[in-house]
Length: 86
Image (cartoon, rainbow, N blue to C red; front, side, top):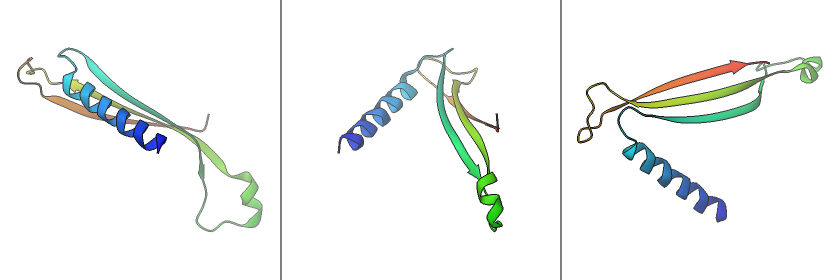
């Protein structure tokens, strides 16, 4: 129950920030997923212990278009995905 309430609060805060961030500023949403394991659909038994793991870094940018004003806010959303085995 506590997790659900916290998730709802975070979602409402995000929507508030997204709808009120001022012109000439950006809003960043960053998520970091670690140790995503890449596994073939059918692997031989010896490959089980030698799986490849990667980090996934998700970066979403919200920014206003050039023609945005205080009264008419129009923003763009850009998605960036970074994957590395480092």
